[in-house]
Length: 193
Image (cartoon, rainbow, N blue to C red; front, side):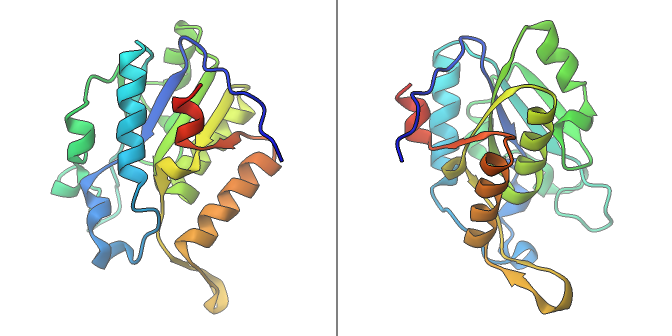
């Protein structure tokens, strides 16, 4: 299957979702996938900033007691790769999965700039990345998700069901592209566009 050439709009916004130190705590989250995610996120941030495109940093401020992502926990801080590149055009803070339910209002900010294309990267693939991408698709944005610039963790479900991080990432790819919410691409696809 050949992929259609990807056109990146001059004002395409890169949404960097929850790339926070708290996700480095494997004792809290369990096994993760895609060890190259952070390098790919950094490469995309560098490319977006070099092209003068907007970079939106999104940070989760958990309201769950004991969360490593709570605002008063060291895990709330961005990972170093984001801090080094923290020239973001906007910082959104959220307490739920979708960046569209954060502060300040992401949709208003994008609308004011005439931005119609979003590239969504970050953590966790099947949680905040997928939720934000689905909502963006529903809102009419052209959404691109370079799956290799995301990562997630193994997850247990009801009745003893369990999926590995790789299985969850595959399910996200199928949900997003198969469901018409987003185009699933690679970092190389975007860097070569």
